[in-house]
Amino acid sequence: MRKHLRKYLPGHEAISANRWLKPFQSTLLHPRLWHLNRHSAAGAVATGLFCGLIPGPFQMIGAAASAIVFKVNLPLALLVTLYTNPLTIVPLYVAAFALGSSFLVVLGAEPAGHRFVTPPEYGDQGLLSWILSLLDWMAQLGTPLAVGLFLLAALLAVVGYFATRFVWRLHLLHQWRQRAARRNVVKDTK
Image (tube, helix red, strand yellow):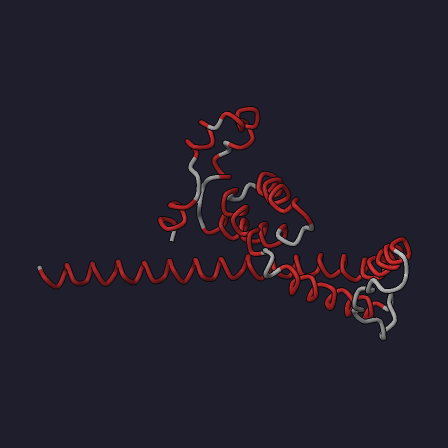
C-alpha cells in the first residue's frame, strides 16, 4: 500500500529543493510530515476529510496547517481534500444543511418546520431588491449550514480515521499471512 502511495506523493528531497518552500523548510521538513504509516495515514485522511468541507479555496491551506499541527502525513492530507469538487460539493452542502437543521431542531434552536428553501428568482423586482432577497435567503441558510458543515466534517473525519486504520490493519494481516505461507512453502521444499 505504501509503495503505491509513494509513487504519487512528493518526497522529502523534492520539498527541500523547491525554492518557493525554502522559508518554510524548518517546519515542512519535519520527518513525521513525510513518514507514511498507519497512524500518520489515518490522521492525514481525517485531516483531509475535515478540511475538505472548508468553504472556498482554503481547504488545502487548512489541511496543510492541520497536518503541520498534528504532525500527520502532509501530502496525503492535501490529496484527501480533493473529495470535494464541482460534482460533489452541492450534495455535500445539501446533506450538511439537512444535518445542521436536524441538529438545531433537536436542540430546540430552530422551529421544526424550517426547511431548505429555493433561492429567490429574479422577476419583476429590481436588481437591488433581488440582491437583498438573495442575501436574506443566504442568511436563513447560514446557521443550519454552518452547524451542519462542522458536524458533517467531524463525522467524516472520525469515520475516515477509523476506516483507514481498519483497512491498513487488514492489509497488514494479509501481508503477514502471505509471508507465513511463503515461509511454510520454503520449509516444505527443504
